[in-house]
Amino acid sequence: MHFHILTLFPEMMMQGLSTSITGRAMDKGLIDIEATNIRDFTKEKHGHVDDYPYGGGAGMVMQAEPIYLAHQHVMEGIEARGSKPRVIYMTPQGRVFNQEIAEELAKEEDLIFLCGHYEGIDERVLDMIVTDNISIGDYVLTGGELPAMVVIDAVSRLVPGVLNNDVSAEFESFNDNLLEYPQYTRPEEFMGRKVPEVLLSGHHKNIEAWRLEKSIERTKERRPDLYEKYCKDHNK
Ligand code: ADE
Image (cartoon, rainbow, N blue to C red; front, side):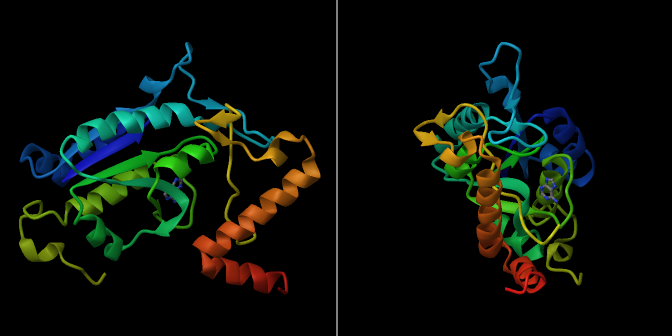
């Protein structure tokens, strides 16, 4: 099993995963973990990978290009082996991780994890590369690194030989209810994909309305359980 991680903190990931059972599994060649630093793929001379969000709002947004290039770089090695990996974005907006998902992922040969920071990632690159959105629960961490480590740990222990006793790897007993709207930052156009016109308008009421609409749309699609609560609260 090959794990590939796109992150701004490769040392943190490698240090965490090189210890204990996952570390031993790496030493034995049962799994390998490669962390790629997204910052190595910025073309900015000061090494920036983030910028202000279009339409305003708090915090910074990670730019599309360094992530796109880092992903391309990782894909070159994988495609040479003929594998077509899933790209997992660690986000509180994703499918809530559980043992069933761990078992499903353990069947893959390669997995790419995308770890975000700041207020989010430019939506366009997510649209282009991500196949799965996974959350580790309904709470917000400062970045996707710890969640990716949680998933990698849970999947690794299902790889034959990683645990000493074979049987224990099997299934053990074991704000208003709306998700965030999509975010965009510079450039205005990335590989033919434009930032939604309304965010460039400076018309705050329209931006707010658009964001609410997108939040509702997205919640309905990704978390129907939360959407149901939202509807009840608003008598819909
Ligand atoms: N990034 C920040 N919080 C997260 C969570 N709960 N799950 C996955 N990724 C995250």
